[in-house]
Length: 355
Image (spheres, one colour):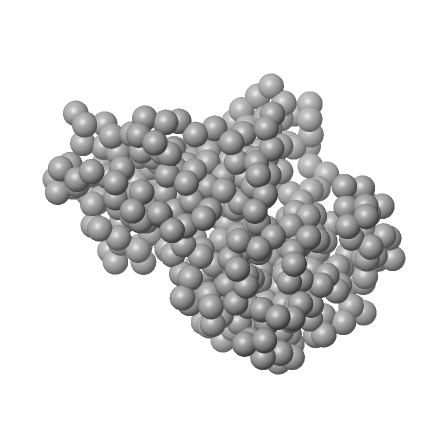
């Protein structure tokens, strides 16, 4: 399909792995997208089941049934989203690319350009390094121009989105003193673990409690480190500790950075407001504000607040997002809109849910 005609013609969309939380979130956003025709939604275990039977919230909006991945005609699509475990997208990407189908992967197959690092953290060989080399890391606010012409998008992890957008304005201006490590203390709702039967995410296990995990090493650490290094054009020290909190949706990252002497005299609030003034989905909060996760629930919005620790020479950043939307499916749709020349906001102008 000629990309110049995309804005006047609906594109055919396939979703591989439509039964997980990011899969149903894609369906929620794409079902009412004015430029999209949902064409195939796959599930190996639930093939033949109407989508609305599994997800009654989609009744009246999605009339497709799940199809078996082996028989789904994904090459008839214009773009295919992979809402699947790591390793699935890279096993199918080349076939789709040969059929002129674009690929947006919500797992980690195309996030890390260093295959040795990928293989260390994900315990599997990378099966298509040639495709990986041409993949674009899909944070629109940082890589919009590259996304426009991309054929494969590595959709960022949820934690990395908060950290990278939180730090980008400082890194771009060289305002972080790398003599001290960047520290990210991040917290996520249980939906970040995916839709699967696991003791740790049972209600009786995760409710009324909070815990750190992945302290010795989390898969998002190398992803964040690689992107921070690229933004800074220098090697950096980075400490990342994720936490599980007893709610379904939401993510809050508190980030601590030491400022350079030059940054001490800069109006950093103005810097952030100017950097993101044209970004629909990044909201720089007023000085002194403290964003709450409920203020972004169900939306593609990410909110940032700055708090300067003048005496210590540090800046504290508080960043919130819905981990399933801007942290996953919403950002993937945002990337799709850019790739096909649609209004970047299409399908994403969803008000947060409150209460």
